Length: 495
Image 1 (cartoon, rainbow, N blue to C red):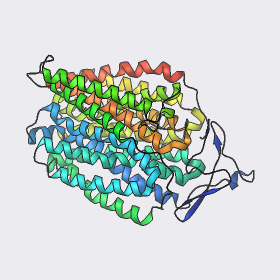
Image 2: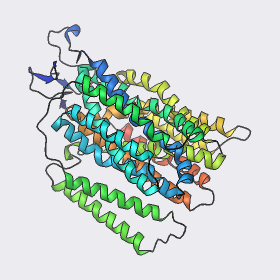
Image 3: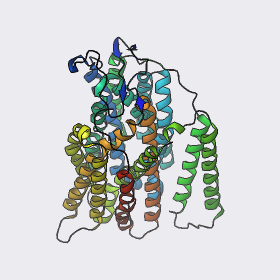
């Protein structure tokens, strides 16, 4: 499969990136980039200011990843403060994830069409302003709506920022993207700890206010230092398909949440009507995808066994890591009565495990290929999640949860760089679009996991125990997908 990384131009020509010029690199799958003079030293190294660019977009990704975990720590406090049921309180996570599902494919397309720098800056502004509004929300329903808007900004960071990194690092874009996505665990460490501090010594509203100074710093630096991105001829956006997908997921979430009510009836007209409506919207989405010349999920990126396998892997990864992982503080507080600050530290232990391994795994990808790290990492995630439920007697719950979540983080550190690059290597000319699609499948997996588990837990006399069984059962789909990963054609070297 032939592909062009970074900026797509005919061979021998160059493409403008602000004031800098990046020569085009021709790559083939598994092959080294073409060298102009036959010397490794003559190989272009990308934008001279690439590390400054990396720092700016990396700081934005840190802000976005901070938001992913800091809210999970504050869920019990939000539940008490706003007097809302657990299943509806969880919408502060699922609504934000739904916003990410909707915006990621859009951001991937418009970042190519209107310039990645412009989309990046607008995303930062939306995220910052909506964070401010979330901090002043007076009820759970308003907070849920504002969280969805916040996700529109946060979800657009990844496609545009990944494209900026790919454009800036030339032949080293594979390692740069692996390093870039490894920033996520850094925010995942700070998020739970800061969330615990705010909840313990101030208010859950501080988890949103902290984004304001960070957002202002990111916007200022981006406006001043990020180079202008080239615009490309882009296909029209499939707004109808985006609406169908978002509406189908939203109504399905609503139906699942209804089951969490104490007086829920699976035979109620509202529940059955919601399921039928969601199913019809899903069928309409599939029909639109097959007939639309430019669907939200490009058919070229779905055709082929490798793409389908990686979509399934990303869905399961999202359910296990982003979905159930966000419920770890709630599980720690409800089942083991651990204080909010300690509960946040438990989740931070997972991020520490991820950081300890992710950097090494990123630099070894060219030697190990994609399959081995994904198989080893996902297996460790399954084992670590199950261990969280089966606590040995005589061990302090906080210590055991810290150890097991740290072990799960090691699995994430091994699997994440490989999973991030595996799909990108299949179509290197579609970095932004594939990043958006990858994030969409992970987000849908997260929505499904959180919606189902909180709905079941809210009907139980022991919600913490129910959540614990969720950590055990998530290992089933993880282990089931391993044979499919083994069947993938492995890839070594850069792409």
